[in-house]
Image (cartoon, rainbow, N blue to C red; front, side, top):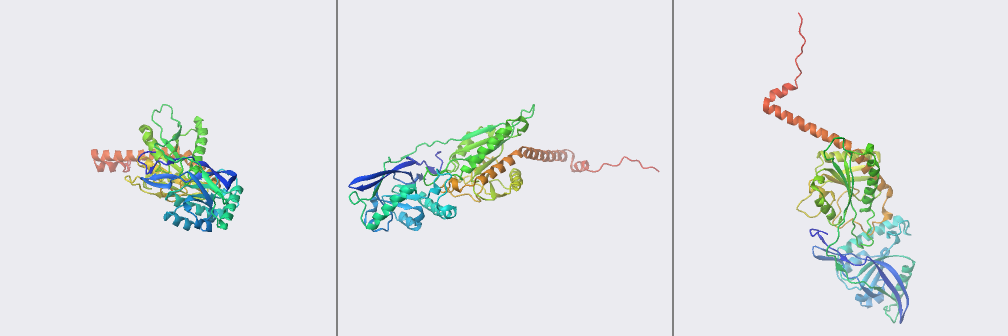
Length: 472
């Protein structure tokens, strides 16, 4: 990550850890292993955020309101809280007041498990929408807080639910869970996280050369299709970002596949070079895009007619937005918008135009196309989002999983971009001729006025006198 980024490098630790659940009555009666995922840890402008500890070795409790929890030292207690029963108000107060706690384990419904692609959780999609909102609020709370104890996420299953039921029974007795009284102890044997000194930023690009006319030695214009593939969420191991921005990446790869077939035949090859780029560091002000643009050969960069950045296009909506930094009156922006609008009508989509000026002095980059605009390269972002998300928001949350993404919407968005690009060569060649013709007319008029005068210029457009001779 570049030093100019607002976010300091995150801290390394195993993404998926093993938590050992032990039944303790003098000796361990049983040991079980469960996958857990640690809350992210990062620094923002030197200020620490997220969970600052990783190791865990404390007894379990199911509620802070139980008699056993109320009487115990909570600094040595791990709370197991299902997301379904979570009291956000209480959790927020507990974190803000910095009350002591040994650790926190949040149990998520299986519908949020990215590994269960084809499964449908028993809560169903209608009720899971409400849980989705709770998860978004919880994630926002945990990410923007400095938490001095370990926080982990796991998923509900029959075994975990059975353990939680036993923990609740033990809490109901009013006895503290100890090695002599019984109960469960949660153990995560993990080294303390270390700061990543120099994170790697990897950008991937592909190139399809256009068809140059025979004997033409000029450089062909280029159209770039760009998508950022990085995510940021409460648990890095679970932040797959199926919509933000997995949908954009999938659409880019499909568009590249289609045009690679078309460009393999000279008869169907367009008059534009096509450049496909997958960029890193999207959540961090599109740092990877910034690095890629500045490492790109200036001669190639100057051939880019425009760039289309794909961002979050996988939700079930009938409207997409084209976000731009240049004024909508700009001839190229107008041409891009008209091209997308024309194709979108055939697909049953509505495309809106959103203009937002950029502040060069502000390091915050809300959209990926703004990195292009800072270098005076025409660019736009196609997204289902009508406004730019806040910093580190909507970039791969825990709720952004495959089950909540509509594949038909991604297919339709990819088709929209592909068909728009297919006619772009003709459209932009015509636009170039119009602009060049207007320039030549203006130049000609100026030369005539300065050399021969305005009357001579006007006389050029007068109807010539008739050559017919009047007869008597």
